[in-house]
Amino acid sequence: MEERTMEHQLYPGIGEKDRQMLRRYRRNLHKYPETGWLTYRTTALAAEILEKAGYEVFAGEECVAFDLAEDVPDREQIKEADARCRKDLPEGLYKKWKKRMGRLGGAVGVYDSGRPGQTVAFRFDIDGLPVREDGRMQERRPVAENFMSRYPGCSHACGHDGHTAIGLVLARKLMEQKQDLTGRLLFIFQTAEEGVRGAKSMCRCWKFGRIDKLICCHIGFTGADQFVAGAGGFLATTKLDVEFTGKSAHAGLCPERGRNALLAAAEAVVKMQDIPTPKTGTVRLNAGTLRAGEARNTVPAHARLQMETRGSDSGKNQYMRSQAEGIIRACCEKYGVICTITEKGESDSADSSEGLSRQLLDMARKLGIYEDCLLHQTFGASDDGAVFMNKVRQEGGEAAYILLGAKQTGHHHESAFDFDEKALDKGLAVLYRAAGCFCAAGKPV
Image: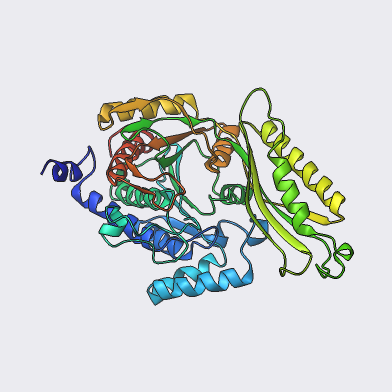
């Protein structure tokens, strides 16, 4: 009985209708995860909810020009994702929004109150991961309550389904009381965060004006009942694809006639693990996939490596990238192999604005819904919300990245990942209070 009472606890400003809507949205999104730019179904649902609430909506290629977006999907990927979206959406909704979004997902909702005030933006990432969800643990809520991913090999293993649900319910709640709003509201539902392609591409095509205050959020990355008002220390990162091209030959008859792309790639991967690390700061390098060869009896003529570098600032990340590229080219020269290195995504290091973070900290403490509230915590990973944050700060605005603590099953990016859905209620309560302070002349909305 005690657990059931806690499960249905309502927080300041959050009603039972909100609580149910958060779970309904989150579970619907969890069942249909989409990756990268191909978030067609997610985008259509978000755009429809925003439009019905009263926002002016821009979707897909209305936000990001395809030719200016990083690492866009190929024709076959687009065709496959489009067919899946059409199957899993009502026909009218599909036709309306897929035509508008074109080949890319993502949406921005804009509301201009017509009254003097700040431009306040909320940014939520919406894409899933190419991770197969674990269906063996019967105690996991998605398994027990039948909302596991319906797409094999793809899942919301980082909580973006929860972020999107919070954003959509917040957007609806604010427009129910739009007579109290001032200034402009922006709701950014950004895709392709995984692989850090979306934010940089959106900022490259930005047409929504200057932002005074930006709030980003993430479930987890902190204590289970902890709120962080200003995460920082995001790792700068670069994602690279490397194509190795050698020459095939018969492995038994005349291997000397070949040039082994697999050996060049494998040796580069091993040698990159020994790059000297700087005395200060943090650096990372990961070789994520390596695919090579044509047949067991043929000298491999082709290899493809997907890798990334990271650093606690842009300089350290660039150091790792430069070192890695040098090793790759030296190994290619050794084996007589040609290589092509292509950047597939990039994000910055960033920190939250202290003034805005202190305001959010004060709000969270007054709500009294978290056991512990912190001003700052190092994020320790990468998130391309950092690109938006730096853009806003460079243009004279403030930006904060908040962390919403939650009990978890597994860790982020693991097949068993799940979070306690009370995190949705608490996150909505904090952002709703923030909106009241920043978008309604300080009055609670």
